Image (tube, rainbow, N blue to C red):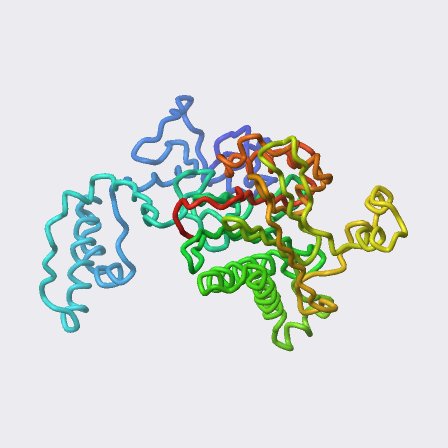
Length: 444
């Protein structure tokens, strides 16, 4: 009987053995088939197997440049692989790939053309693509004030950087030969609800006539900015059409106010569904004040609390306010219930009692004609200015001495006076020298 060699530990699990053990008490290994290994136990594998009978090492990973055969190719070439097991592994991989290509070609030959000519590589494909240049804004497009590159979309935002743009009506300036006007949003309001229109025309005898219309949107009304703009446009158009036909300037001013009221009333004509969705909206509304200056006549007209001041060039003469406010304070003074200082100190002072709009109680245009006996300037303004120069003497002090020669500069100075005072409201002012000088005709 074969005698097992004396082993001290199990060659399988290294469990300690006792003399005469035929099987390992731990793993059950058959010790009768084991011989004592020589003392020399090399740690390097020879031909992939260790001499001490240990488990063979894990298979080496495939060479990185060998591509696995497709599943279909593996099935088609299995016989070839079995027939060439004794050949070099590289030869096997090469034949597998070749057979796989042949197999695909055989399957696809019936359905696809024989040749697919490949175009020559484009040398430009390897070159890095140049960054696409942003399209230049159109010639008439507004340029963003922030990035100076993008164009401004109709909603008022830059299409490039998204920056909100200043609105056109935030600050407006316009000058003709004999009249100028400036309008500013002020320092507290989020938009400018004032509007103006200035123009020059010729009377039937060729004498010049200069007009200015200033409107102040009622902030508590719906769309006051639209109301003021519509009223200014309509009144200006009416005056420019009436004066050349020989209509008296005072009658022309009255008709212009009526035309402005009609334009504002038209804004209230909304679909019934709009009222259902916004039941608390009221009709658009605004105030209006205007002046017509000719060679020897000054005509003013108004509805609301915007004003006209007369300031003579020779400041030794008195400055005069030419309009009376449609306001709670003015009514108290006219009724003798309060003096002017008390009335305008009341919190109800600026509540207007007359305006243009579909919800106005009754349209009562006010007009007046004057024949000044000396040269001067006519200041047409909203309460955003006269709140900081209420008395005629205060307004005269704010008007530059050269206002008759530099009406635009004077209007800019007056707007600056209101902004320096706090700019709590929109500010709009037009300056007209009197008498109207024959400096050409135009409109704006």
